Length: 292
Ligand SMILES: [Zn+2]
Image (tube, rainbow, N blue to C red; front, side, top):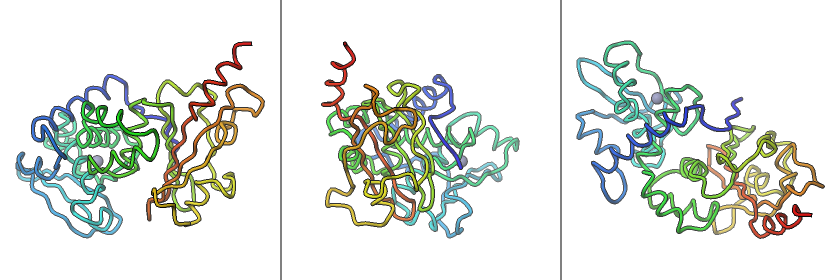
């Protein structure tokens, strides 16, 4: 089981990779949706879509002086699905990040099966995921659009349509952009998967979350989504909750036990995603409570 609080990449390395990805996006697609397959073609990287069961999402191979991307339809489903776009973006990360490309072309690294969308904890995989997220959702454009949208999943579902990205990658991109203090928690069908917390807004007490399906209140949005209930027309379940219900070291009597909004969206065979953020109306009244 992996518990991911935030990327282990250093801030400067993250900035470097995000900047590289944004520069590539701006060079090839200065406006509109980014098409990673077209970028691969421009760089004379060949690409094939095949059926490889659960072996990988994508794989970058270097042979005879050329790069080739294999993409696995058994996991990405369609050649233009959001997961396919992220996977090709991830493999392009292994090409555009100098250290990754040089390691492959000199034979220092063997081609490796890549699992996209934050399923791997390996550093090179995180770097390639970060590249993909910033290639498909370049910072300047992402901030501009995200700031106009509503907080939480309602906004995230709209943002993802504009970028052609998955709910998961868009939610993580949103959380790491620090628009609001928030947590993104991924559940597999049977178990806790991983979580991302927005950077500086969660103090030490807002780190340890509920990490077991059996600890979820029965009628919570997340429990309902995991039970396979059909979400309302907006596409996700939503309810008010408290910090103490979700964060292990927050006590009910504490002032920081503020009201949170819990939202949960089913991801089909990839499980359920929970999005948590404080209800700002109760936050301001709690700030008053802290003063005496
Ligand atoms: Zn990879």
